[in-house]
Length: 120
Image (cartoon, rainbow, N blue to C red):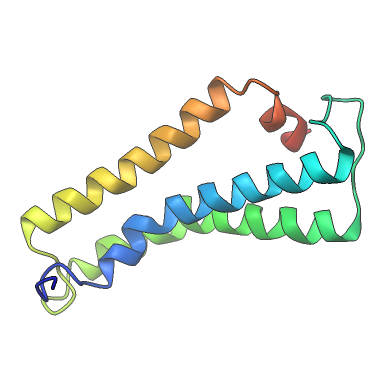
């Protein structure tokens, strides 16, 4: 069983970018299933109501993961009951950093150019 120091609410903040990546993968799957292939940038216009709702959820999750979660996470460090021990905080920071590194690696090396299609 995990120790109480390791089961802090700050883990939710550390794992938020991974939730964003899972949502991004789900919108990619939604596109693939809806079009029957991966979209061609500036050619395909796949704007069904379901896709707009799904894309809005992904966009909101991305903004929250990038802007809100780091501020909440740092604010948690100001309260002793919510503060994670240094070792746990460093592990959380590593998990958080790996998620954003995975996102940027996918965005830069995107084989299907989905990020450029999504941002157009």
